Length: 211
Image 1: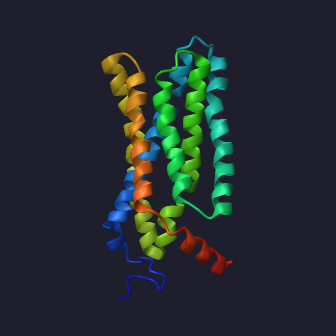
Image 2: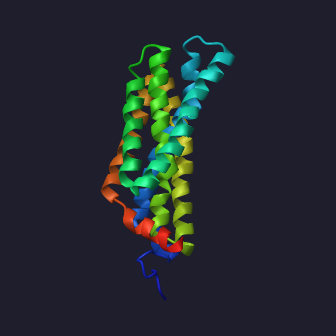
Image 3: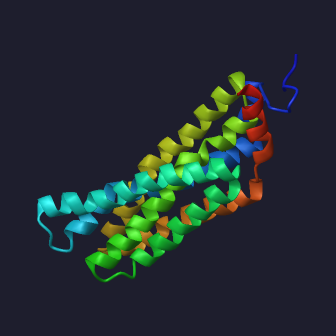
């Protein structure tokens, strides 16, 4: 029974699930979702702590996601134009890590929002391109199985991110240490992206053949 296509893509589900690369991609996705879910869950409370009204808090809290959405679109177009994935995913993850760490030192609303908006830009930019990694070298049933496993990592992170900050806030009385802890996850994810690499030329060559 064949387990791979002519271009080397794995199409055998069980083997894909135990592949170190798939597991590494799961860890990357965990780090990406971990930090994003933490920001989403606690952003309102962080902004509200500066004394804003409920309406003001809602509008201000929407800013990081607005600029993040624009960044996702523009950064994705740039990645397609340059036909490069690794740096276009790793660099935004590093930006997120630095911005989250910087947000813990911000002592006013403006600096805090600049930092968290920068973190959101990195998160959304990386998130928009992440799925080019597993889908570029898996196809058929193997791709479906691997994507399902990677999504399980993301679901776990969706719970763990808010929980981490909540646990730290309960223990220390502040979300600052929690945000600093969150910064570790996109940093590790970015390093893993650089370590794994990606055959961007092969991905775009396949797209050109299909197009």
